[in-house]
Amino acid sequence: MRHVPSIGDLIVAVDFDFGDNQRMDSHSQTHDSIRAVQWQDDHLRLLDQRRLPAEEVWIDCRDAGQVTQAIRDLVVRGAPAIGIAAAWGVAMAARQGVPLEPVLATLRAARPTAVNLMWALDRMHRCVVAGADASALAREAQAIQDEDLAANRHMGELGASLITPGSGVLTHCNTGSLATAGYGTALGVIRAGVASGRIARVYAGETRPWQQGARLTMWELVRDGIAAQLIADSAAAHLMKSGAVQWVIVGADRIAANGDTANKIGTYQLAITARYHGVKFMVVAPSSTVDMATGSGEEIDIELRDPAELLNIGGVRSVIEGAQAWNPVFDVAPAELIDAIVTERGVIERPNSIAMQAMFGC
Ligand code: MRU
Image (cartoon, rainbow, N blue to C red; front, side, top):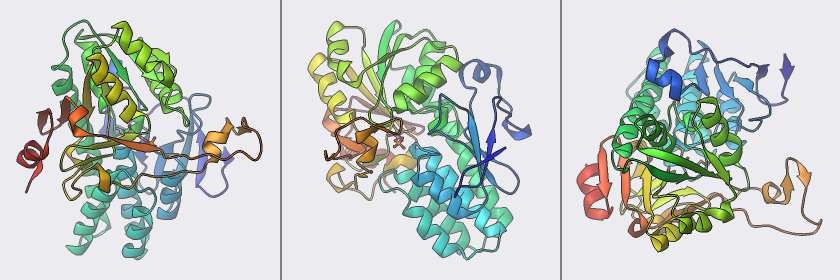
């Protein structure tokens, strides 16, 4: 047992116990073995994604402030996962008799771009306004988590069905079990596509500066026995030119009402490069990532993080002292560069405002 100052208790663990209500079916056991966000009766246990793959360390958050900090510090990351963690933060605060309005506001401000965070908190808030007690709020958080897993499984099948057997795919960032309730969005399509034989080659970009592709996606794929090759982000155009990939498959942090999609920095240049090379571009995200109140990508708040994330590698300064850096961590792929948006409600090919309105309008 060790302690991290400021976020709960820390537990080093090497195995994954899913608990009674999280049993895996046989397909999942071979292609989905990770649950990074786990409610533990009175606190939230998170797999610390800053430390993977070197160490598998679990952090116990024992109040909503610790959950907020875990989201801000990327202990838990990925759009659906931060929404789920925040929902449990609200449920925990209710259990502890903490006033909920300030808790909701603090959690909401933890990160700006992924709308799943706001969506989950709005859902919890509606329950609070309706008079839900702590038990009802815990049930709502569990429902958010369960629905995300079900959506991912469904999207996996829908997305994989678009892919011609024998194809190669390139993915970006981490969109897998670590970033969601389980299975993943874009990585869920890759899991399903590999299982069905439609996907023959998997490539993952490193995803500088935080290395979600190198550290997290490769960790998930190796654990689940899915052969994949890591590429430097800057190798993507060369890879596409080689003909080895037929689809780029990414997740999303916010999809605007016209289909413009905010996702991890580097997604925009992958979309441009894919179109140039005749490679198809697929966005995979649950409907909780769709924000019909945001008209286009121009209106999406792009998170700027500490330049130190670029100036250091593994905590060691790698750039001359005195140098500065600009560190936007998301960008927007315009709808016109997207061939398909896959959600649990269905697939939108060549997205635009009309198709988005038809599927997601009230
Ligand atoms: O900064 P992160 O690691 O939270 O960014 C994550 C991404 O951009 C993912 O691609 C996105 O959230 C989709 S995860 C299913």
